[in-house]
Image (cartoon, rainbow, N blue to C red; front, side, top):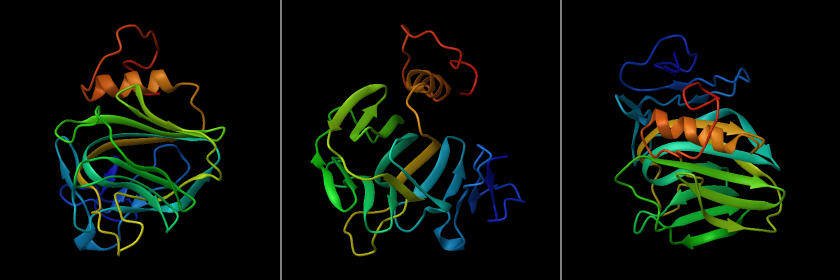
Length: 212
């Protein structure tokens, strides 16, 4: 099992989700100790209410090279880290706001490829000082000369209660975080087929039917 009804990951979730198990073996689980703030299970992903649902990680992630793959649908805060880093899609127009180390690296960036009505495969990446967002396998925005690490300590939650933007409003189906982009296309193809998002017919890889 991956979704659990308690933070100790001992009881399988059937409605609300208190723990989302890290299957990498690193034991960096996503947990929510407050009952009222727990997302709910559905047949097509974890449902976040856009009010207070979300998870905190048992250990902060902070890396100079990091690739965050997310299959999701909706808008609001996808992930954040304390008051310095956050990635969200604005509730008014779903434009991208993504900051690193308190710097607004992507500030209200329009993304014609992003849609809130259907599942999307996103990759937030920072490699060698260049940050990129890919949507459904295609680069949507890029920014160079980014200083510091990509940091995450929560999923679906705000970085600061005073912000006017909501926590994640919609569903998150799957999250994969790796520190190399060497297998990016393989990972994208696996997720796209699993969640019926798109299909890169020109790609040949071993992960199209087998998890990476």
